[in-house]
Length: 394
Image (cartoon, rainbow, N blue to C red):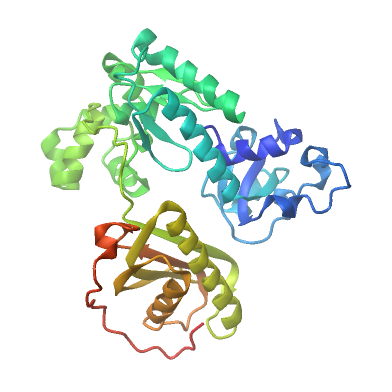
């Protein structure tokens, strides 16, 4: 989907189309945005001057997404809002509304399934689709079916998407970025040298900043330069699995099928604070935040039909160091109070003297609610040995 969160917001606020807008820094529901409206007015009636500007933002939230006019200033996802304010101070800022984004996510995926039922869900705004056996899927190299899907999604939701059509998932993913927004790119096997090899290595899904930095130290900046290296050298330099994978992707090889059903390993909720919070001085505030995270995580589990046995917490301190702890219980649960109780026990096993930037909670070892595994009799479970802490717990 094209700038998905921002595009959903522009359906609400059409007066912001064509303007630099960033989404991030907090959460809200729709009713919070319309409380000050005069009777009979709609969100589209809010004057542009009433929206907050990025230059006035104070905090350390990050950008979830940005409209394309904002991206022209070098603004992108995961960038700190304060840094973005220096690049484009006039940009408008809107808080995120995940409930609304999930609603549109379900809507566009349902449209796709009605056209092409072999679909792999890759998150809130992205899917893989297998065109192979779809009627008309091979016409015009897949372009005709891609156009049909684009039109069906737009008619149902008002949103646009960009589609990459290719022999495999690796190249299709890269191709989907070629003609954004609202574009279609068809890449054949014989296009590898002209369309894929000139791309920076970072464009390959799976080559992150650290790997890219290491490649650059060896003078490898493009996919073509990566393809020119011998497989053995890549294995010696990056390890057996990673080196072999790099060689394969540089040559456009990817045999992964489109997987229509996959079970999540875990689910989690976390939040980054606008200011550092301390376990003692801000105990009540931290406690309320932690309880809210546990309740929302329980709602996620219940909505998706999962229960779990391993409950864990994640902390990021003011020095950016991270601590995690988890505990396995004797029976599966999707209960918010149970998650809160076990998560609290995990918190007793981490140092809490330093201020905190982030707090998260996770439930793992998932099973489908009502499955034989989930309904099996409780078994004894072992957890890690607790360690002493001198701080009060929230």
